[in-house]
Image (tube, rainbow, N blue to C red; front, side):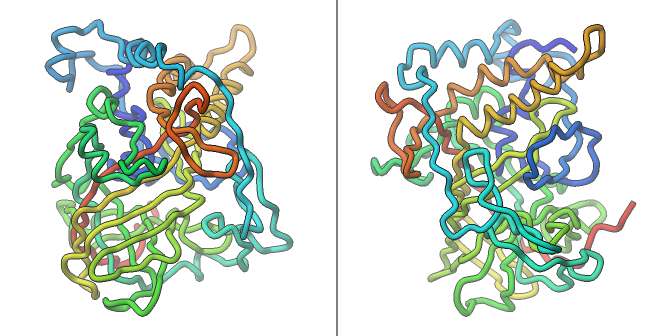
Length: 401
């Protein structure tokens, strides 16, 4: 399988695959047949089939790409960062984040502890939870919900500054995707009228708005229950949305509030997702300091909610991304001489070289962020997407095949 630059990676490029972009474009669902490289016990969410990158290089290409089919965005992006001293040193201080957490990832590649007996770790809250049989313990009722019907990777610097979360405290929002939104993914996919954004956000435990106190915002992969599929109305949740050992949501934002119609969730220290690094390869990644905001403009009961001005932001550390690629590389290196390596092995060097342009912040040992510079080299990427929600009703689970 031959690859002509990063433009051939548009289906799973960094901007399109990272967290919200990945989830909004088709969150986990079903067995993709992808190889899930051992991730040290991180939560696994099966992904949708990886896109076919073997087609005509001109297919779905922008006008600039059609005019210059030889452009190699992986090389170009790496060259863009070559002169930036803030991207060169590889120092990556990491202080485990285990305060208030008894188990689960510590943010530095380790764990905060293990659970004893039948209890299992709720990786969202970092606590040991009672064992639960999904067949009888998974939720049977749900709170008000909204389905993602549009999303956008922000590429305009002014819009990023005004919209995204300010991680480094300079008064402007941060996003490391920026330029890459335009180069390797569609920055404004618009509404998914065919129901291809199967992601539902549920106000956990809420009966109707206004809610009495904080609640968890649960992020649930789902499927439209209508024919043809739609981005609003009834949805069926995938059972993979819940942790198998304790029946709790795999992705959730505890302590969410809605004040004067404004929804605010996070920061969440552990948002673990599974997504395709390359065709046939899936990996778990842990995002930290994740936040969701938006304006609830209608609904709040069983009929669902409408949300406008939605924003998802999170941090992906260089250490986390490098470790994921290293795990995949180890699998390739373990293939005996004369053996056949997976096709995705050929993509890893390009993926590795494309990391530098997206790393826009320096995460200090105490977990705070500053702008990258020669003294504070980039080791973290801020990710920012906008979205809207249409009213949704969760009616049950996706039937077993």
